[in-house]
Image (cartoon, rainbow, N blue to C red; front, top):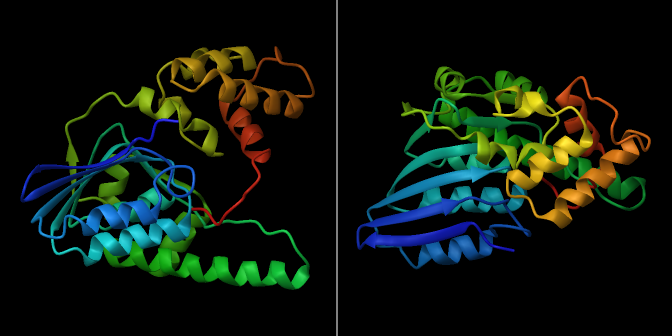
Length: 264
């Protein structure tokens, strides 16, 4: 699998960081990120580019703290999507921008555990503590009240550039670009992704259409086939049944995902 993560030097004073992958085990790990960042301790500015569906809360918090501790000024930019854990990594920016057609998404931390009742209660306590840390990050960056942020996270809030600017999550709106193709590939991760804004979504009426759209967006054939197989179970084996709402399909795919770590 190609790793869409890189740290490069333009010159001695500027560091370019691109996070275009999941956060954590299957994508950009905090261990690698922090190691690379420490090797560039003398740079004066960092250009942080993010296009990620999020992932591990713990990795995300470690990456956020590493950026905040770095002496360089951080210029953060949303290329297409900064969701979940990626959204609070974004908050490490001293200056944050995004184009009009990009999105930021925030929601509650979640996770899973296999064990007895006591172990499940302990997991709930851990998730609540991590949730508090995330709320604190958003609160400090935006100036919003804690309860307002908790309400936004509970509702799984999607923000375009105008929304994000209004709520204090970004500082400026950059020149609009077409990020529809970038957003398509992350659609399967979320229940309420505003897919009506994605180019071509209105033409998807069957699971076969959705499978073709996944392939067009760059998803591997194996992964696309696996997603469609899961969706067929939800639709009771009728792959050609018209779908009146693309959100219904997103919810169906989301239901069959098994949480294996604490995510945001």
